[in-house]
Every structure is written in structure tokens, then in C-alpha cells.
Image (cartoon, rainbow, N blue to C red; front, top):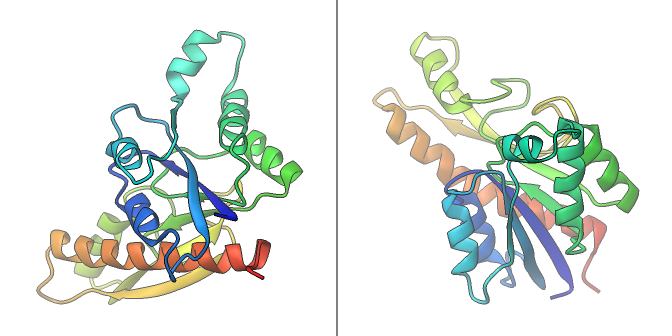
Length: 210
């Protein structure tokens, strides 16, 4: 494959699975996932990567064990090490797909030096429900009559959480008879679609197919 994507995860990896399924298909042509890094050892996404065909190389690095084992190191050093690991595989793009760690200057500067963009998936519309538990907060706001829909976006990664330039945005309706579970399911289905579309969009910009 001529185009390579590195993926950062923290959990089940359902968004990673969407990328695995799309890789080297018309949805993501001539594209492979070159590495998957998790900051949680038990993240099922690591299993998804290992069981892919062909298996995708994986890595694990968690903040607290890293700091415990390297007493002179800082959170910024951790971010630099995360960047070093993923950049070893020479990706054209880094996708944060459920990565539950706020990246800092160490990570962003390392990517900038190599001219590798990073994008993040967030289950909310731009400017709404930045940070964690966005789906739950949107559903609560709907029940209070404050909103009548939510959405999903993929944005460029900057230091400010979930505030980078949006690449793709899609609204997600909230129905009157929704439970949190049914609304969450609709959000996740949208995530699986939009993360592939945004990945292709950025790859077509940074490494267009001839």
C-alpha cells in the first residue's frame, strides 16, 4: 500500500474496525494501517489489530506507568514518546480514534517536524460538548429541551481539546422516544462512516493517488 495510517486508541476499537474494514477498498484505496497504539493495555482495539488480515503491528504505552518507570520524565516526555513510536512506521496520517488522552506540544511538535497531520473523531458538533462524555451530555441537553439534534465531527488535532478545524461534520438526530442506548447507537454508526470519509479526504490532500 502506498498510503499509511497510524491509529491511536484507548478502548474497544469500533472506529478502528471501520478503518480496518475500509482499508484498501474503494472507501480507502491503496491505504493500509501501519500501526495501532493504545494507552490502555486491555483495549480490545489491540486485539482487533492483531486479528486483522494481515495483522497490524501494535504498541502500548500508558502515561502513569511511563512516569513511574521514568522518574525524571514528564507528561510532555510521554507525548514525545507516543509520537516517536507512531512516527517509526512512517505514516502519512495519524488518526485519533477514541484516544482518551489530551495530547500536548511534545506530540504536536514532533508531528509538525515530520509534516504528518493528525485528526480526531469527536461525537459532537463543533463548539458543543467538547471533551469527555459528549454523547451523554448531548442526550441530557436534549431531555432538558436545550437542543433537538447533535452530531459527529472529525477535526484537525490542536492543543485545545476538540477545537481544531473541522474536516467533516454530520448532524445526528435525536428522536423523542430515544433512550441513551438508541441515541448512542446512531452516533456510533455515524462515527464509523465519517471517520473513513475524513481519513480519505486528508490522505487525498497529503498523498493523492496518481
